[in-house]
Amino acid sequence: MKNHIALALALLFLSAVAQAATPCQEKEHDIQREISYAEKHNNQGRIDGLKKALHDMHTHCSDTQLRDAHQKKIAEQKEEVAECRRDLAEAKQKGDAEKISKREHKLKEAQLELKELEARDY
Image 1 (cartoon, one colour):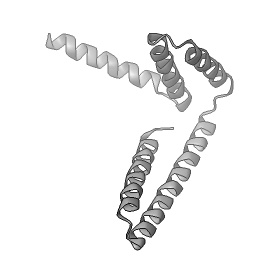
Image 2 (cartoon, one colour):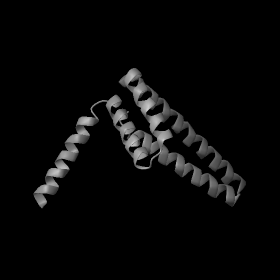
Image 3 (cartoon, helix red, strand yellow):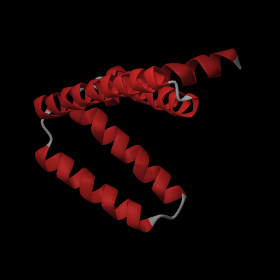
Image 4 (cartoon, helix red, strand yellow):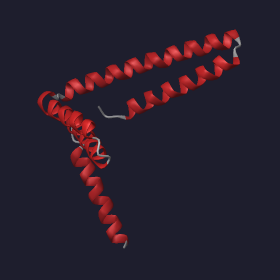
């Protein structure tokens, strides 16, 4: 039984490594995963849109372009985090407990989104 689990984990690892060799291949894998999810839920509109996105990705995908776009998203999210910090400081200065709570929540969400973006390879 342990051998079966070890073999399954090894195959899963090798499959993941093989599929995420380049940013374009990683994006293709993400789109394929979304298509599978949409198929399981019989969401034909989503399937059609994802298949178009997959076709467009095959036609136009460039690893450099993906990396540049991703870096731009990270920069934009860093600005969002900075704005949330400014808003929080302003709310603290005014002493409005409700606004402070809302701003803290928004800052945490923005920071989480930034971490998720930074964790992606492309």
